[in-house]
Image 1 (tube, rainbow, N blue to C red):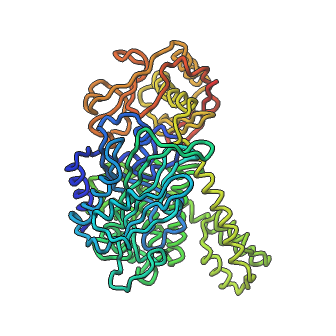
Image 2: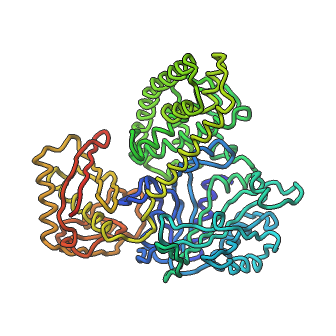
Image 3: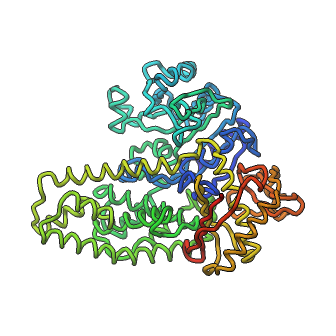
Length: 592
């Protein structure tokens, strides 16, 4: 089975279970301070998981593109990917554990025809915060899963959330498939660590709210959030232990083999990294992310450069990324047609990859010179090696190879020092990432609601002062400030900045009410309501109006939430205006 067929079967199945399909949203979250990228199907549903009514109802299904780099170091094995497609179905205060697990079991065994005898499932074992999940275990038993194939695991394995330090969370129940059933039975945990059992589906049951003092209380609305990874499932359905050997990846892998002149089976890790990272880069570029030293642009740059380093380690020294990107975009079995932004931005994608590759090859040369300098001074330590790895993207094995070529003898603790430094860096990065996501499901902080509303006013003011060519291209909101990115060809003058600031404050002083209305996307366009993500809107949408609905100051499609009246915002002050990429500007502003 190919990816497209799996997606079609999944959507059809859940439509038959009275779900409504919602489209994949952009990888870059709209008006969301919580993360750089959409990393799960639930991400765009945050307001609705918190209780806001969804315009499409209580049962939803989608195929959502996601990007995760938290475990980027694991890419190179058989199952990890940075960009991927996630199949998901949701219950927003409707069905719960028994119904969710029954649907998952039916789809896996009846639609995908996976033998139930190959399944293992896991449930939350319980702790001081929440009881053992016997409800899920009993549901699995009634579905025919034998007791010895139901495994109770601790919170680190079978609990989701909260995304930040507080918010909705709960136990989950995961489904694994034995991909080596001819081997003798063995302990599930040990076998799982060796990759024998491949996770294919996760059912998350959001039934608790975690408070500020580690206190867990029941939620008034319980939700189901499920996720099935397409890459892993396609591999399982085709009897593959290596997901990179499925039809999803074969065209990309074969192209890399041609480019390098080397076989995949003897160079698996570097070829997997190249394939994964360039595919991810293509989709980020398609969503208007540009390589840069900051935030989303930095992640994109890192992915491209890691791929180039791996290609160099295989002896590929000429530009290859744009040729490989064409193969990704032409993959008709998977992406062509599903993501129109690939075709729309094709020229930009190819040019951006070429430009970044040319820039990085200069950086690579600097890295090699730095290694050479440290070798000559006999100062190539594990710490220095990590600095080179972090700054220039050199993997450890490449640094060691350069030392070997120069007959440089590394210290006995060289690799240990490198790994310890790396672990410390990863821990700091994970802590920062968790802080970045704080608030996504943590609740609607009053100050955040104010800043969210202020972005709409700023958007409206910029379009009135600068012209209708201004379009939002991103935003980031914290409790301290807002950042708003928009399309505009040149730096704003002091006069334009002051006019924009004054107009936003005029809106605030006018005490304009903020209302919302559910309608079809087609109706919203007839009314001239602003929407700049039209490839990704569902049939029914929510529009927010600031001011009189018939002649509003602002009318935009948005998931919300917002304050009730502009007078709640206080004083608006623009702190800084700068470039955020080619043809884009960025404003930082405060409310006081």
